[in-house]
Length: 280
Image (cartoon, rainbow, N blue to C red; front, side):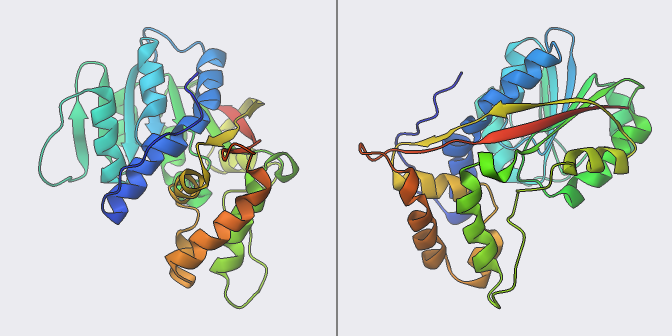
């Protein structure tokens, strides 16, 4: 398992910084989830994986290390470039139109989301959507394409937050909900869904739920500054920043993290994530 403590920082432009903070700080917190899914589905040589919202490619890298052939889609070119660096595959320079960004014999990264034709041509064994921060409405079109055009029996894995009472991060994410609604009206905590949200999403796309599980994914950071950067990299605070300002959001995240600071300055939050296995 990858370590959960981040050390160091790389200041860059705002967008690049968010993408790199995701890759270097936050994404590794989900390694227990990735490993559990790979184990449960016996991912290995000969497994073809299609990853929706693949981010900077850590889940793809772990699957490829087991011998799987992986294809990842993401709408963020910055994250895809980092995935290309991480997976050490050739990168096309210049603009990033929809279509292949990088490709070799075992890995392919593409911008946007797969079409029905992409799904039919891929012949995938497993389709994953493992970023718990991805809104359901953003996943539905791709999941519907998978349900309509993937081979019968194809496994589709969705991930989301576990019960709020078992996710320390839920208290911190509540800051995003409060700041994003300046009128003070109740707003849902971003990323924290209901008990049956994954099942509802799968059935709504035409998939058949076929098992689920829970995984402990503690969030561990070297210090408070790294924790703030990692949480911001999830994208769950964008609405809060737009409604207030970056300085205010940073300040309130830091205050919400106070109960999780340890005497040595590190920050640790215990969290549980759910995953659902559905079938085409």
